[in-house]
Image (cartoon, rainbow, N blue to C red; front, side, top):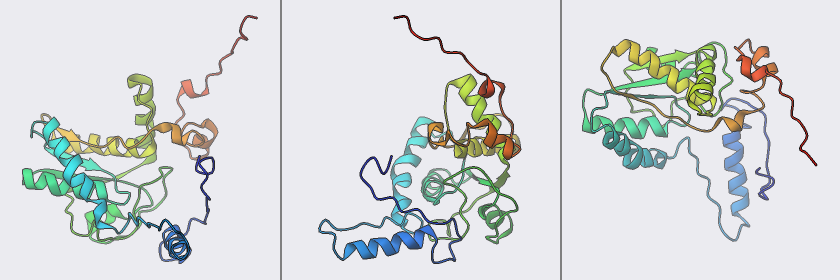
Length: 240
């Protein structure tokens, strides 16, 4: 889609942030180089370190949650990608309700669970098929937030939720939404009945057709495959 829109897509290896060929460092270098000759200017958003990332969730997402729950929200939980959502929302909600509980749903392979559960940003064992979440280091965006309830969420816990939402609710969502909901379920069990817990449904599942909705890929990762995903259908040709 990016190429169809006329963009030059630069693909780089998946290497740690400490490696100078990590995509964030490559992006910054490309921006600096383009800035020398680009007549319209260049913006490097740097969403992992730019504190403005938090602001929309402080001035918009947080207030929306507060208003739509009539101030009766007891807890908020989501995963961390850049951290802007959980940082902005939690900061606003704490100002409105001091005893609100903030939770974290972290996929395997990321470092945020260990950071908030044990005080060290150390990657957890294993990996996850989820994309766009799973921060591996402490950044300015998340360094001052407090998480009362961190959870380490397995893909095997989150994936069935995604399929259930599609089959039962008509909601086609991505892997990070499954991680978020699984975290909300864990938090609900810890807090007990009668609490209002909010999470984020991050994006559409259509972006992950080659993985999340591919039976062969799921089997290769030893993840459950719903029956309806393997069911074959015969399409009859139209009448002439």
